[in-house]
Length: 337
Image 1: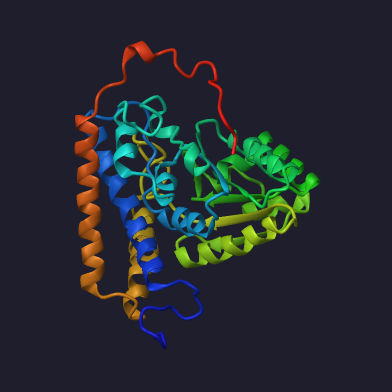
Image 2: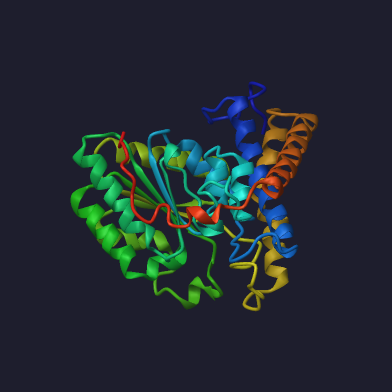
C-alpha cells in the first residue's frame, strides 16, 4: 500500500514535517532513556529511575494531539511526557542529575518532572494520586468556562486504587473535561494485570461511571494520535470525560532496581522484535515515501548529538545552593493565567 502523494500518509491529516517531528520525538525519548540508564549505572543519577522505553508512541501520539493550553498530569514514569511536550532535554537530564539547572531545580528528580509554562503539573510518585488532581483541573476549566482539557496519564495498576474510582465518579457526575489515558503495559510493578484485576480490559472500568471509553494499540503512534484527538474534542465540546486504554509494553523493569523475575526474556524480545513502536512507525514512513533512509538517519544523528549535549550540560551544571533549601516550602505570590 502506497500513498498517492509523497510526504503524506493515507487517511492521516498530518504534514510531512509533523510526521517527522513525531518520529524524532520518539527516537529522542528512546535514546534519552537509554543514556539515562547508562548514567545511573555510572552513579551520576541517584534515587529511583523509571524508564519509558517501549511506550514512546503513547506519549508522542497523545501529547501531539493536545492543544497548548490543555493541562497534563502524569505518573512517575514521566521523562517521555516532558520530552514529547518539547521541554529541553538538557534541563531534563540536569534534573535527573539533581542539578540547579534542572526542570525543577534538582528538587524533583526522576519522578517529579514539571513545567508550569507548559501546563505540565508534574509526575506523581503516588500511584493514582494524580487522578483527583486532574479532576480538579477539569472542574476549574468548567467553572471558568474554558475549553481546556485536563489530560491524566496513568498506568494499569492505578485502576485498582480508590482514588481512581473517586476521580472517575466525580468527573462523570459533573461532566468534567478530563481525558483519562491509561497506559496498560501489562504489569503493575512486578504483578501481571491477569493477577491483579478482576476486569482485564481497563477501559471497561470507566463504563461504571457512564464515561465513554475505548481501547487503542499503544504501539501505533498514529492510532494513539487519532483516538486522542477525537477524545479531546469530545471533552472540549462539553460532553464530559473520556477514557482511553492504550495497550503497550515496557522493555525495561519497573525501575532500575527491578530484577524482572516475573517475566521471561523471550516475552520481552517478542515485543521488541514484532511490536516496537519506533520500528513500526519508521517502516510506515519509508513504505509510504514520507521520508528516505537518509532523512531518518539525519534525525537519528541529531538526536544522538542532542542527548550527548544534555549529558554534558548536566555534568557541567552547578549543584543546588544549600542556602536555597527552604525555598518553595511556602508558596510565593503567583499570577494565574
